[in-house]
Length: 267
Image (cartoon, rainbow, N blue to C red; front, side):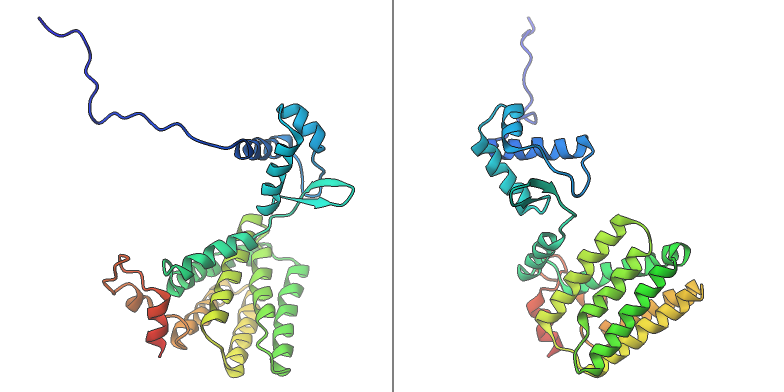
């Protein structure tokens, strides 16, 4: 006689019950509320009392959840006014990315590759969508960088502004945000790992002007070529280990070249 009881196969397991604190659950509810309610940057959230009543929790619990949203850069507190939805804050993301380098998980070559692919890929949109204000903003960043170098400074902020202005000209806020993270992150790594000469900065400023001139004239092919030369110079000057080196190492991280070994190579 066959056993009528079904046997549970060994491959099927019970999923563990998700353990979340009340604060975490309130944070998720508030995120969903912000997304679903159509709140825009600068709009005020309901008061603590209103949120506590609607959620059926204490004002203390709501206050703790709001602190978490503030730490994430989603909302900001204005004295005697309440909590307001704020513009995206990318600084926490930059800090997280920087911690990956400190953990020797990512390398400058990885970052450089991502930046190169991104910077070159947005140029068709720049040529197609940039208006007079965009071109003025791009040129002003070049002039600011040139002026800084003449004062004996490196002009890194103006350098960032140039790439930021290009991304802004795409009219795509996602691309603009991504550019912000990658550019800030790349320059932060540069500051931590090396110091460039003024002559190298002059060359970079000249490259920016060449890119701008080509794009302004609608010569996309030349603009992309100039951008590629500009970004490849990071490898040629020894700032970034070439991919042939970074990916040919049988490292214990599956080919990833840690930052400490990158430093050794530059020496």
